Length: 282
Image (cartoon, rainbow, N blue to C red):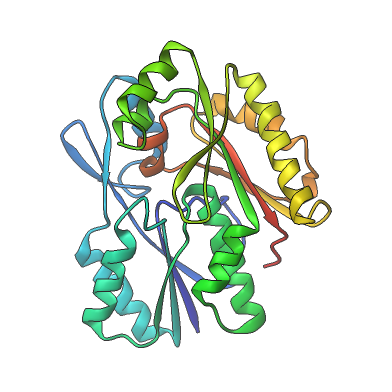
């Protein structure tokens, strides 16, 4: 038996059939002087209401005791356990999992860095499951290849939440607001947040994102063999996501995901995007 574990920074389409057992480590979200567990005691809609009321939501690692419990149970019940965490450049979740595995002395647990987050983390997880199903093994090199052969394009209508979360500097946030600049973001091959471009409107964002994604699949030579996962925050953003995905083969879409509260705390209540990469066959 093989078990996969990830954290709630990973966004997967609802209802997707997985070939292996999957356990989730909830990241923690703080708002209104309360602590919540992402996707357990706090859903995205409530987080968005908190943010839209002007509250600053912050995030933290999964509870160490919860990490220990989940890893110990998985190690005892499975022959092999693969833990794929949110990018180590964006969170210390990878480090805490490594520490717990070391303290447990569990030889059958492999800890891997997804070098991304959200829907691309979901894509990497699915690609990892495909590789284990086909080859019976998985290494960081396999994860890195999946990262390199896929691209996240993510639209954020305001820089405010990225600034609050420490992802960009104050000056950049100020001028972005002043000039009404809206960034198209990605995570690079090292797991850092980078900008693919900037636009002024949602409509131009959709067309720019479609071109960026199309250029990527052409460059990688996967224009006829790719998979897509889409994601959005509040319901109104789904309309723009639908317009974006309509530029591509609908048969390639693995599904649509709501963006979890832990990710939304950093990108804000109005965001959408997609990941496109080598075809996933699970």
